[in-house]
Length: 104
Image 1: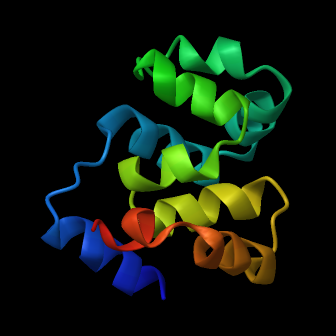
Image 2: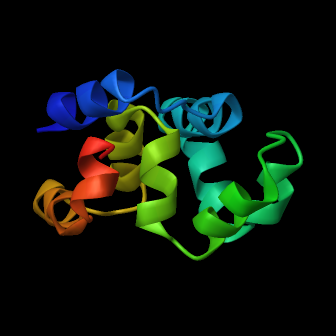
Image 3: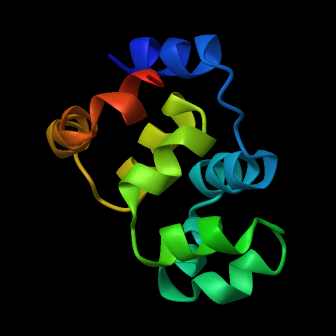
């Protein structure tokens, strides 16, 4: 499932956001960073210069806006670090409009 979502975005020329991807990568490797991100996201954003709309999407947990901008595996690890279990994560992916899941 995750591979299919990632492949669809790649085929459609969707571009991941480097800083969002880096944040998710770093947060899954560093539990302290993940905890700070959940407790005080603004302090973490200072080190990851993402576009304001991506920062807002993280603050409001706007899954639909986040998905097109990050690698599917990093997305999964990030949500796991926030306590979202795989069945809920998969349900959230399945609930996305077809355009978001498949770039069309």
